[in-house]
Every structure is written in C-alpha cells, then in structure tokens.
Image (cartoon, rainbow, N blue to C red; front, side, top):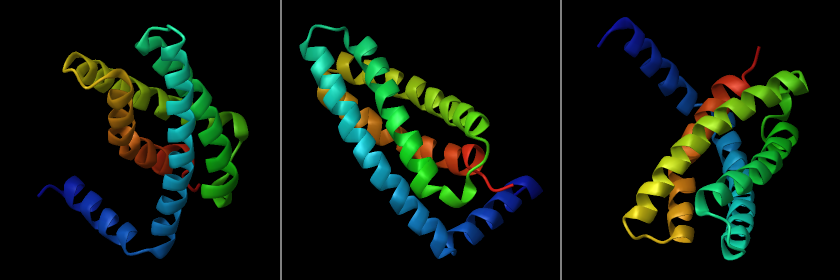
Length: 143
C-alpha cells in the first residue's frame, strides 16, 4: 500500500472510532430522509403533471438541496458553520456532483424499465454516500 493510501486508511479508521462521526452520520441521514421525501414528492408531482423526468429530477433536486442545506447547516454540522456563502457554494458543488450521478443512474434505471419514480428512489439512495463524504470533508469541514 502506498503512503497516501495508508494515510487515508489510517484516517478513515480513526474517524470510524469517533462516536461523534456516527451521530453526525445519523443526523445527516435523518436530514437526507426528509430531503428524500421532499425530492420524491416534488418529482412525482412534476412527472404526473407532464414534465420530462430528467427536468423533474433537476427541479426536485433544487427544492430538496435547499431543504437539506438549511437543516445540515443548523443541525447536523452546526459546530462547523463557516461563512454561509462559501459553505453554501461548496454544498451546491457537492450536490451538483451528486445530481449528475443521480441523473445518470436515473436514465439507466428508466431505460432498463425500472419506472421513473422507482428509478429516482433507487438513484437517490445510491448517491447519498457521495453527498455525505463530500459535505463532511469539504462543505462543512472544520478549519
């Protein structure tokens, strides 16, 4: 194992032993569950109103990401709040990366016959780890 990989493994192992990180993950998942519900509700409403599923996914993402940023800033990572603008921009960048992954997975699932709502439900779950790691390590990192 290279020094860089060894260092990452050591830091990850250390992080997993800290109870605070597990509490933070639980809070992040709670916020994420609420965001998941908001996302699917808005998405389903827009798809049933006739909007194309990819555009509906982007719109529902914007609503959910606003909800999630607010709750994560004030509850999950409250001890790690930085400048609202910089932190918000970082959160948006991480979320846009997750959205890109979500759109890709959604398109694949719909093409495979999973259905638009089921495909979105699965895609959201699969991109959640990207969101947590990105936000924990970059958007809300301790200085």
